[in-house]
Each structure stands twice: as structure tokens, then as C-alpha cells.
Length: 252
Image (cartoon, rainbow, N blue to C red; front, side, top):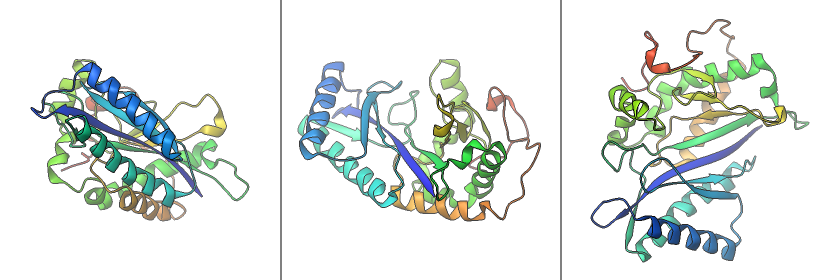
């Protein structure tokens, strides 16, 4: 049984498509928190500033109720558009709303639990096998995770290397995975508590449909039990994935 949490990124822009001012962002965050508290919307964890100019991130709690998670994300998108409009701003979930700035994504934080609630990703073999399964199936589900062709620019290696050199967060460009490694398609997050072991699947665009994306991830997971573990998988990356040759690109 999977438990999934979501991190959804977007930019707040002025009508001129310039970044929203700091005071406009702060007002938006206050109003957004007030709106969710007033409506008692479940699953919401927090809204925070991200690295991009006027970029924000919505983070949800983990849940096994995946229908609730999907409806929450779609409702949140509507609320973001509506609230931004009331401030005479625009919310953008596009891959790169601002030239030479960070990308938007919808990241899925996934853990797998058995009938007793035990987190199976505590087992290193299962953890690696699960990551390898997702990587194997990513090309098949990429059109669902990234439905707008324009958003494929997020996987452009040259653009990401430039962002990396400037100390900004990057998008993955290759089918790879690694421990606490944001240059990979799958980041095995460090957990303070081993029971919270999870993987961060970093492929989906912020424009993606949450329900269709999760359905495609679950479909890919079906092959998990049928797959043999690759003991020395060259896709397991130490350091910067951009410097590894021979890795398959996410978007070819």
C-alpha cells in the first residue's frame, strides 16, 4: 500500500509577467493560509518560498487516501489561480515561467507499506528494486507526467547545468537515482526516522494532472514484484548526475 505526499511548485507573476514583489508574495501567503484554515481543507502541510524569484511551493501531508490527495491538488490549483487573480497577479505552473530561473515541478514523495503498516522501503533491496522499477517504466508514462510538450524543456541538460553553476535547484535530466540527490530523477530522501523512509519522484511537471500521474505511477509499480533487482545498477548515482556519461536522458 503506497502512501504519497506531494510538493507542487508555481510562480506568482505580475500582469507584465515580471516576478511578483516580496510584499505581494507575503500578502498572498497570508491570504492563502487564512483561506485554507477557514475552509478546514485537509492534507495541507505548508506553503513556502522556493529558490526561484517569486516561486512558491505547496507541500501536503502523506496519505494512503490517494483520491483525496488528487482532489486536494486540483482544488489547490483552482484556489491559487483565483487568489492570485484577486491580487491582480498571475499564477504560473509552466516549466520555466521566468527565463534563466528555476523550473516548476510536481514531486511525489512515496513510501510503501504492508498490511501491518510496516514501511517496506526500510529494506534496502526493496528500496533499490522500487527505484529501478520506476526508472524502467518512466519512458512509458512520461507523456502523462509531462502532458505539455513545452514543459519538456525542464529536462534540458544545458539549462540545468547553468542553473547548477549558479547554485539553484535543478531538474533531473537522466533516468538515475541517488541518496539525497536532486540531480536525479529519483531522490532517496534522508530520513531522521527510518520509518519515514521515502523516495522523491521528481519527473512530473507542475502542469500535470495529479490523478492521472498517480495512476500511472501505480501502474508502473505493478511490475515491482515481477522485476529482478539489478545489484550494481549504473543508474545509482553518487555526486552530480550531469557528470555521468551513458545515462539515458529522460526526454530523448
